[in-house]
Picture 1 (cartoon, rainbow, N blue to C red):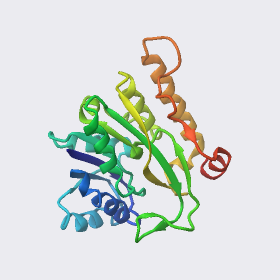
Picture 2: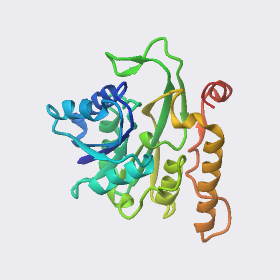
Picture 3: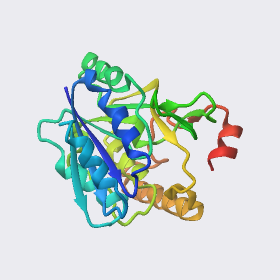
Picture 4: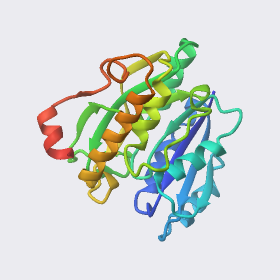
Amino acid sequence: MKISIHMPAYNAEETIVSALKSLLRQRNAGQLEIIVVDDGSTDRTGDVVRGMAASAREIKLITIDHGGISKARNAALRATAPDADVVGFLDADDLSPEGRYAHDVAMLQADPSLQVILSKVRFFDREDTAKLAPSAGSHAVDGRIVHLGATLLRRGLVDGVAFDETLMQSEDLDFMLRVLEPRPKYALSDQIGVFYRKNHGSITENRRQMRQELMKALFRARKRQARPGPVFLPDGLFSLDHMPELLTWVK
């Protein structure tokens, strides 16, 4: 099975080496294609990726003028190999848990009708660079939310769906709502699909804009929905362990 993994990157030189290494250790899952889109970085992100790509043929670098995360994600979608079977995602400051893709691919191979796998997220703030995982002293909380890094999609679901480049945030939720509108068969995995780095310099720190963009994505989904009732989301998709702690730390 060929896995195309998309990574938008903007000024990510401090974290992208760990992110890419965490993907390269997934080679036992199948043939990997790692598409990094450098969104007009002003630091050494492009040079760092080129250096890693020189010894890892799985890594492909695309450089574009700075246009935001949705533009970068769409560039990766357009560059996806025609023979890719599934599409996954990882942001340049997050980590992919060891064995994650092998686990998900086995699920897809066992059930050809399965279209989407939605795994759990582990939030963390300190990295063990040797293990490419949260360190023993990291503040870590698990939850299940809409997060592209914890998602694996059959290629057919992605074809014809693009990220909304007018959204500065919640582009992932908007994308997933449209992917899920046909109600494909999905599975909620209890495995951790992504280690999500709590980065105080990240775009999600702009809370007012995040709430506005979130409501915009949900409103658009409701307008598109032909049947009455709430916007469709898989049962159990939002499940946060230790919710008071998570909300205090993450929001």
